[in-house]
Image 1 (tube, rainbow, N blue to C red):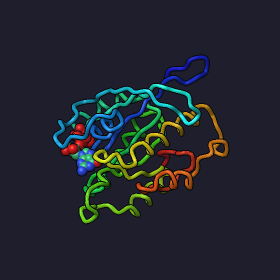
Image 2: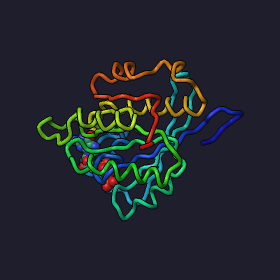
Image 3: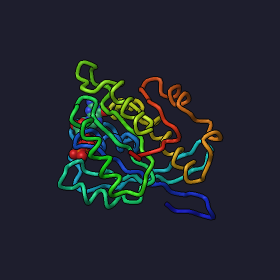
Length: 211
Ligand code: GTP
């Protein structure tokens, strides 16, 4: 995090989750790069940056760390995002295994990172419902258990991506600046409203991975 006279100028966000859940595709969507079906797996970790306008109209720099979901490269990636203030914890709605593995990722976050704010993302929501191996209810229940906000996204159609990103960045900013929840004007009902096309579960100030 860079600070300038107590003003935050930069925030760091890591993307974690099993291989092929769509971490790189989500970053590309955030970077306005066209969706592609033919993507190479990430080796180690990759860094991208973009400017972002907060709710209060301040502009900051966002640094994204795309970590490989592949077990062989996990350690390198986790090292590079050690000081990330936010994590997008991602699973693939059409791959139950990636949902079951979320607990492994939570342990890795707890052991390697510095208490980041976490949101849960169920990606590939554009896929036909009959292909979904995880229901919105199951995912919402998991999110509620850990007090994460939950977003259903598609890197292909961009559904839910801006909502999730905006929620996460503003919540991190407010957390660092010590802005009270009541002053944030953002609660679960606001999130639900702004997220009509993507399911979103409970969050109380994005309190994170304390089990
Ligand atoms: P690793 O680098 O191996 O950890 O994978 P990753 O999580 O970065 O996944 P990646 O972004 O490379 O996407 C894997 C595959 O899923 C690619 O073929 C993507 O085109 C596809 N994909 C990613 N996001 C979506 C999505 O929202 N919808 C659909 N239908 N396919 C997606």
